[in-house]
Image (tube, rainbow, N blue to C red):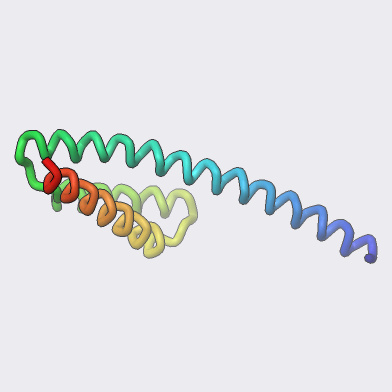
Length: 100
């Protein structure tokens, strides 16, 4: 291996370690988020509230798009990601409601 390749391998390893740490943060953060949304779902089911809140969802999507812009993240990707998370939350809320 040339010195340049050795240095590149070291840099690559450093990036991969950062990616691994960030993936862990993402997973644990999503876990925490879903704990709170599960509590929301249980509260909604207990009080016979709708599983979906379109106004809240629209506000959250707009907020995430703004944050994505500030974080130099593709806002289209951010919107797709939040839409996926929201659909999972609604599915959980509906399951909670149906099981009460």
